[in-house]
Image (cartoon, rainbow, N blue to C red; front, side, top):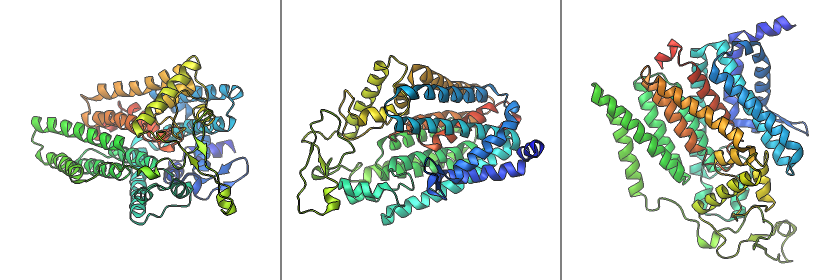
Length: 463
């Protein structure tokens, strides 16, 4: 039996099939063919992840690259560190969610690393690249469908929009299955950049790069993401500068067409737009918020007895005049609370899931208008897991940056792709309310580590 399992684990054809199915299933999460067992939900991505993790054990000894080993040991320590917190936290439900996500992040990293040992670098890259293109086109087409029709998959998003009484322009934002336009934007950016990172160097890669950047800019404009717009423009400027420097060194004139076209269209789009960012009308601001912190000035409106039972069961929470805070001020309050949690915990962290729990419980110094997510990955990490995990994680990303810089003289195209990947990753981590929960975060990091670990492989010269 053991020998059969070993043979199956080393069969590149079967591993490639399972790995492909894993990649194709991840955007759907538990929304596709899921079965609830009461205490947990089983769905294709989870089943495939567990199976490939088990089969990957036969490749543990093949993982010899220092970045890959450090990454896996870090995630293992991260997981153990989060479990050690569990008996001492109050918000058990929130803690379980975060611990589960750290475990899945560890398993995802192990599967992507071990799969490369079975398939080989080129076949591994090809499997991810082809399926990433399929996923990117799929969610983009559905996003356009949502923009045109205002229809969304069954979920909480549409109900929340109705409850908040927001303008119909926001209802026509793309969300796919992720219940939030910002989450949709994160997936567009990171899946798009996976394609750019793994696409072999050449004219097609150049066209894809500018096309994906244009799409990222457009989606950011539609969902009114200032961070997304600035990130797309920053990356466009950096790529244009890199290509311009190459143009000055050699006859490479056709490449200039794409950056010039992108900049002209982007600037024209901004200038011609009457309203760069949509402002919620005053009469619709903060009619519905997610929670009422302790000692909050927010009052519960009295419910008319003539209303039906459904309306009586859901009284409206009304914020007093001046309670509404614009996005910048809201994010600053969330960051300040995260720093306060860090200091309050003496830099060991308040524990998994406790950032959300402490906000929901009203145990915060800086008032927020209904948000309970950090909206910044590094603050989420530092405040909940302390300075040690924070420094190890940042050290890992800095190591990736150092490896990319060292690779510059050998393969500048790949090197610039890695550096821009880090910039993209840092930028999108500010968009959603919580970053740990997003599986694209786990996948993107694992791909970066594997690519960097193969810098010394002659095959990377073809990228």
